[in-house]
Length: 382
Image (tube, rainbow, N blue to C red; front, side):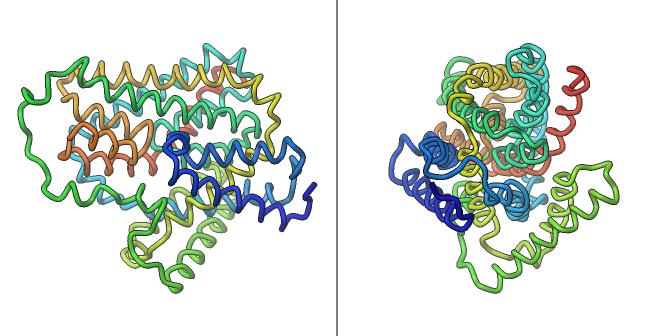
C-alpha cells in the first residue's frame, strides 16, 4: 500500500488527469463528469488497498486545498455581468432558488430517518448545488465536515439527478409550450452566440494565455483571502469561515486589476477535482451502497419540488417558458447547463442571461446553503 503523502498526492493527481482525459474523449464519461469519475477512481484505488482511507494528503485537500479552489473559482465571478440577465431571468432564477430551498427542507423532513443525523448537512449542500453549482456543493461539504461516504453518495446522486433534469427541461417546452415556429419572436442579443462562456468554459481551459505573473498574483490573492477568512472567522464567529471567504473573494473579484488576471477558474477547478478524488479515496464502498438510495431520493425530491415551484409560479406570473427552462438549468446545473439547454433549444437570446444568473448562483449558493442547513438542523433538533 502507498502511504507516503507525496506519493498519495501523485496518485490523486494521476486520477484527476485520467478523469479529465476520459471526459474529453468519451461521451459516457462526459455525461458522468470528471468530478464523479475522479471520485469513483479514488474509491476504487482505496478499496482495493492501493492507497489508504486516511492520509495527511486528504486532510490538506479537505482544508486549505478546497478553500483555495473555492477562492480561485469565485475570483472569476463578475457581479456586474449579472445585470445583463434582465428582470425576467432574475425573477425566474429567484423563484427557482426558492423552490430548491423548499425541496431541500421537504425532502429532509421526509427522509431524515433514512439519511441519518447528517440530513441537515445534505439539506445545505443540495440547496447550494441546486442554486448555483458544484463549487457550492464542495464548499458547503467542507464547511459542514460531511462524512466522506455521505459526500460521495450525494455527489453521485447530484450528477444523476442533474442529468435527468436536463432531459426533463428539454422535454418541458414540447409538453407545455407552443411549437417553436408559432412562438412570438423576441429580440436576440447579437453578441450572445459569441460570449456564452464566461465562467464554465474557463473551468476547463483558459480563454487567454496564462502568464507567470498572473499565476503568482492569483496564488497570492487566493492564499491571502483564505488566511483572512480564517482570521475573521475567529474574531467574528457569527459567520463561518466559508462565508467569510466567499464574501472577501467576491469583493476582490470586482477589482479591475484582479478581473484581468487569467486562469483563476481553471486552477480552482483543478483543486476541486483533487479534493473530490480524495473524498472518493476516503469512502468505503459497502457503506456507500447502503447509504445511496435514500440520498438519491433526497436529491430527486429536492429537484422535483424545484421544478414544480419554478414552472408553476413562473407560468402563473406569465414568465415565458424559455426563460424558465434556462433559469432552472442555471439553478440545478450551473452556467454550463444553462448554455447547453439554450443552445439545444435554439434560445440564443437566453444565452448571456443564462450565464449571468449562473454566475449569480455561484455567488449566493453558499449563503443559501447555510441558511437552509441551519433551518433543517433546528427542525430536526440535530
